[in-house]
Length: 86
Image (tube, rainbow, N blue to C red; front, side):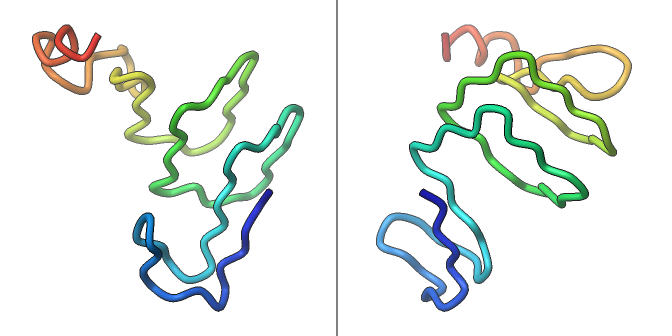
């Protein structure tokens, strides 16, 4: 269920929130489409993504610890740290 936090306090019991921020938890967004959205600093944690298409201005995109923007995919953390996380 999406929660619109327009009148929410600046600090929640679980985490810091920003006024106007929408939080999706335990939602099935299969076939969802986001158009002309600013997803700056968005975090997708514990998500399942298959057959995903991203078309737009993308910079500093990290997927499972690997920065995938630019010419070549490269680890966002050192290989020894990445190995320790596995």
